[in-house]
Image (cartoon, rainbow, N blue to C red; front, side, top):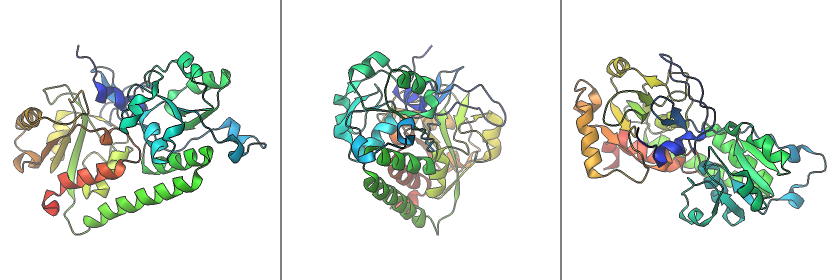
Length: 336
C-alpha cells in the first residue's frame, strides 16, 4: 500500500470526512495532519480543515483574566493553519513548537517539533514550557488532557472563510494583538474582493476541484463540496463548484456523476503525495489520464490543471494566493 505523502497528511487537519450525498463514511475525526481529509479505504486524508471560531478558553472566561497581563510568550501550534495565522499576526518569535508538517513560512522549519497533527507528543509539549497551546476543535479530547496537565489551551475551528477570520480574531485577542488581527482580516477581505471584482464581467465556468483519488486512475474521486473554504474561493475566483450541492465538505464522487456534471475546468491534486509543485511529467500524465473522458468540456478545452501547493490545503491567511491561482486557472484569458 502506498505510504501517505505530505499533502495527504496535511489534509487531515479538519473535520471528519463525510463522503457525499451518494455515499457517506464515518468521520475520521480529527486525526490528520494539517488541513483536511481522509478516505479510510484509500488513505486519503480529509481536506476539510477546520475553521470557524469555537474558541472555548477556560482561562479567558475567568473574571480575573487580564489580556495585557496574560499575553502568552511561549506558544505551541498544533496545526499548519494555526502556525501560518500566528506568523501573519507577527507572533512568530513567540512560537516555541509546531508540528512536523508545519512548513510555512520557511523559518518555522527551525522550530521544535511536537509530533504530528494526529499524534502530538504531550511530554515534548510540556518540556517546551508553553503558556498557550493552540488547537483545533477536531483534536477532540487532547484539549482536556492538556488542561489536565496544567496547560492553557485555545481551541479554534476554521473550515470556511468566516472561520478563518474568527480564528485570526480569537488569536489576536488572546495574544494581545487584537488590532493587528483586525487589520489582517480587513486586508484579506479586501484582497479577495479585488479578485472577485475582476470576475464581474467574465463567464462563470463550472469547476471540479479534486482533492483525492486512486493514483493513476479516475477512481475513488473525492472532490470539494459545499462547506469547504475552497468552495468559497472557487466562487471568489469566478467559478461555480459543480458539487456545491453536496452537503459534505469533501464528498466521494461516483464516476457517472463526473459525466453528468460536465465541468468546464478540472483542478486536480488528487494523487499528489507532496505539495512541492507539479513536474512537467506529472502535468502530462494527469492530462492524459483525463483524456479517458473526452466528452468533458474541461478535457475538450484543455482546462485540466494538476496542482500541488499547500495554499489549497491550509485554510489560513494565504487564501488570497489560492483565490488568485484559481482565478488564473478558471479565466486564463483574463490574465494575459
